[in-house]
Amino acid sequence: MTRQVLVPMDDSEPARAALEHALTVFGSETAVSVIHVVDDLESGYGGEPTADDHEPAFFEDVETRAADRHLETQVVEGTPADAILEYADEHGIDQIVMGSEGRAGVSRMLLGSVAENVTRRASVPVTIVPAER
Image (cartoon, rainbow, N blue to C red; front, side, top):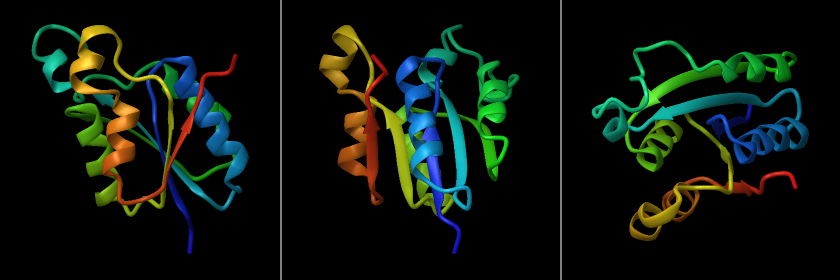
């Protein structure tokens, strides 16, 4: 049985560290799914593009780094924690590996970080990887 690992990505150092961790720790027989979540609240106000727009440029780097793996990349739309958990449930994910950084400032205090929210609610193990320092 092939293991399925999910790595939520944005163009940040913690997310890149999470990808490197997943590629290093889990063997080449592990399938890696990398998703980029477009926050539906931000996209509605002229922020980020919607999931129907083009893939983010950093997916090229992801595909290069994971060239020896079964890799799937996808852009999904929704509230980040909800979208990550929904994807994990719908795609038979065995492990989530994500960066430690979440929202910043007032919104973090009010809503909590995405990593914390995913960790509390996930039905599979979650590994939180700090940014390389």
